[in-house]
Amino acid sequence: MNAWNRFWFTRADVLPQAATRVGLGLILLFFMLGTAPNWHRFYAADGILSLGEAGLETGRSDNFWCVMAWTDNVLPIEFWWWIGFVLTLLFTVGYQTRWATIGLFIFQSSLIHRNTYIVNGEELVVRMILFYGCFAPGGERLSIDAWQRAKQSLQLVDPRPVLPLVWSWRLMQINFIAIYSISLPYKFAQDLDWLNGDALHWTIASDMWWTRGWMSWITLEFNGLFRKLMTWGTVLVEGLFPILVCFQKTRVPIVLALITMHVGIALTIPGVTLFTLSMVAGAVMFLPKQFLEQVTHPLRLVKT
Image 1 (cartoon, rainbow, N blue to C red):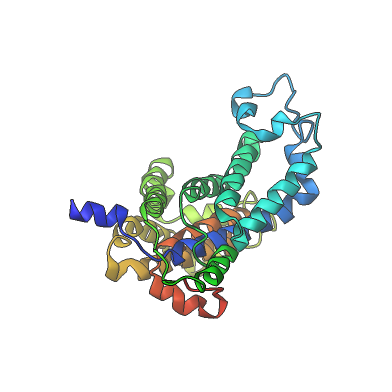
Image 2: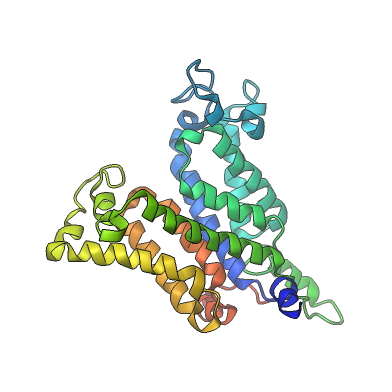
């Protein structure tokens, strides 16, 4: 029982969770700016694929859970881009963080239900983190909220802050671990090339993920040895992460290995850049506070 209570109901500095919030916010800002020119095409009711099309598979688009559908023919779809951009900005800088997170969760969920045909992995990862973030103290560090609370605490008799409970943070971590625990066996069942070491060759060489089509040389070097090392290295890191991240001595090395793997994927398979970088942001939540303080010391707004 003591171990259970320590795991769920201990109090701790939430710097790792705040770092995840900032990283995710920067990714979402890039997403919002990148989709702005084609926002109408992607999300308007009469965009690339009209939601009124008779042959549309209606099960793929559930308008009831999309706030944008409630305002069709009332507000232009560009109005919702500005709402999303403001919420994302507030979330990133940590101003009114709780409400910004709730609003951003509703907004991102609406995008998924608005046009499920363009949903990729990053939207689902972002939605998961934002859902738990609605209950998490993500604004306690690296935020304008924390800076304002620090100014107010100077007027108190006992300015020492009360550290928040970590239960919401733990739920987020468990869900993140489950992604790898489920995806790796699925890879083996779906494609035997993950076992023989050729899987990443077909991914990197595919025009679906790399439109310029000149990166396949990487997987052909050294008579294919490099692609096998890349494929088996991915399998090794993803397989070990759910186990080694649970132990203090191996936590930092396996998290850094996971981050390195995903950064490498972002460089060699640009078609999944936002997804793999969202996994980098999620992995940061496992890093110890002491490690992150050394890395982020020049950037910290306030220590609470």
